[in-house]
Length: 90
Image (cartoon, rainbow, N blue to C red):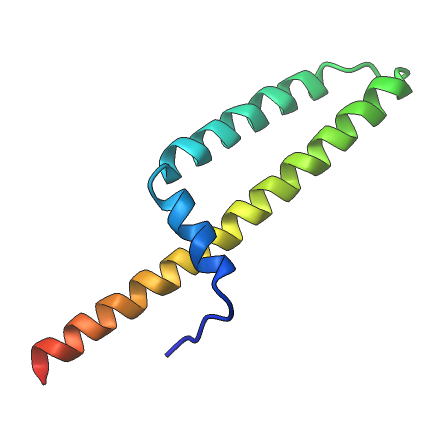
């Protein structure tokens, strides 16, 4: 069985669980718009390249953070289901 360390992961999961589809959808839409804008930058425009590179890195970080929180949630849901099934057969 998976043991979760600390309460922060659970607290983050609890906060995001209620609006999970909304936050993920919003983040993906923002990412899509950012990639669209980034793809229209000319090769010679180094200033905008750097600006969008930083935004893309931030977007990547946000997606990774959300992914980690959702994985914790998935682990918690799996543990709950295991307990329910064990209680049913014991």
